[in-house]
Each structure stands twice: as structure tokens, then as C-alpha cells.
Image 1 (cartoon, rainbow, N blue to C red):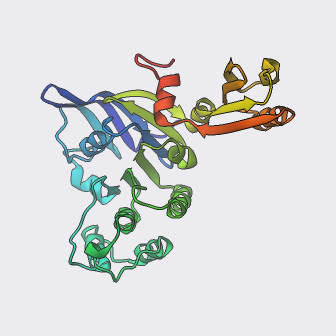
Image 2 (cartoon, rainbow, N blue to C red):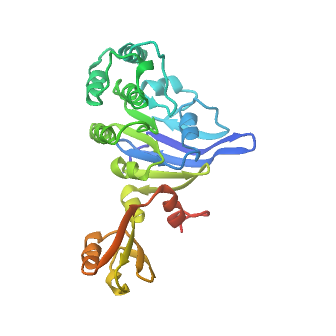
Image 3 (cartoon, rainbow, N blue to C red):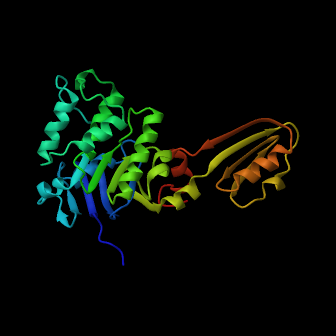
Length: 299
């Protein structure tokens, strides 16, 4: 029996005059999962999140969080929900620990252990003034404040902006640990590799409309990698006759294909030939849309 969703969105629409922010959006996020909310910049991710939290007046539709109405019960919802906005900013003249302690008190929490543990893990100096922090360290403050009250549901809007790759990996590991503790996380991103790393399911939005909701395993199968090989001599197309190899195109001595599985075997077969050049690229979000989620639905 399926659990009741923590977040239940039905027919959510936000119009800015004649401009569509989001249109007829339906989505469920279930307890204990990390749901990725994926789309290009300007797709409607932030509008959706703000409308769900009652920070933006929706045009129509219904949003329930913990079975409570997102607008009428917003105070009760916020007691159980951590939130990192995409445009996070605080008082420049205050020390980080002063800001975080104040925000923690507003959640009715006195235990600072999670705040200090996560700050140490992210290498955030609590004694520095917020205004003296780099963009990456300001983002760390936002992450800490979203999780420090140890709430049940966490909403993150582009959480890794400004973080260096090593810190991103630390953050991903932390998210996985929070999931193991039973937390539910709804996380927007425009980076395919990010949602592939941490999410159980992903909802893809484009131009304000939900395109698809996929298990991450299905998305990985579609993502694949683009392999381009330039041979010293001619190309035998039969070497690419393998499961998981698609859209093989031969142009003289250059072979281009999409590889979704059996990459090791493909490389072994290629290596038996003289190779001039070879490149392997992960799909970008734009490539995913062009290849699999064209206008009007799946390709």
C-alpha cells in the first residue's frame, strides 16, 4: 500500500498576466524519498516551490503538505519544513552563528548540535561575518539553516550553487544520510549529473509545464553518453552491434553514437583498432530534451 504523499500538488497554475509561470502541474512527493525537480533556468522551478510554500499567490490549483493546505496552514507546515530559497541572503554585519542561532530559535529549537555538526562538515566558519563570506560559503549558511532544526521535509532550490566540486560531494553524502534517517527532500536543479547522484525520482519541467516524472533508474537509461571516435582507417559498423548502443552514425572515419550500457565492451572493441581521437560526453539537460523529451511529449 502506497504511503500518503508529503507533498501533493494538483492543477497548480501561476500566471503573471498573460505570461505562464507554471500551468496545470500535478506532482506527488512521498515520505523518505529525494525527489529531484529538474529543468532549465526559467522553467518554473522556483515559482512552483514558492507557490507550494504560500510565498507566492497561486492563480489556481491545490497544494497539500502533510495533508495541510499550503496557504491556510502555512505556519503549521513551516514548523515541519526546512527551506533553502534560490536567492538566499542575510544581514552582512552579523556573525554567521548569531544569524543561525536566531533562525533556530524561530523554529522553536534550542539544540544547536546539528547546526554545529553540519557547519563543521561543510567547513563553515561560524565566527565570520556573513558579509565577508564568499558566494560558496554563503550557500553553506543557507544549507545549514535549512537542515539545522531537524525537520521532516526539506525543500531546496538549487542548493549547490557556488559550492566547489569537493563540497558538492560532501553535501550529496549528507543528503543520502538524511534520507536514511527518514527525511523527505524536494530539490530543484538544472544539473542532470546532480539529480542522478542523489535522487530516487525526478520530475522534469519545461516552460512551466511538467514533462515527465521518472524513476532515476529509467532516467539513467535514457541519459547515456555521446561517444565520438575517429579511426585511423575505415569503420566497421558491426563492432557497434551491441545492446545499449543507439543512433550509430558513420561519417567517413568518424563514428558517433549514444551509449546507455555495455560501455566497457564498446571500448574493448574500439581499442582493437587504430584510433586518432575519441571523446565521451554525458548528456546535458538540453540534449536530454532534444533527444527524449521533445515538444509535445517523449520522442
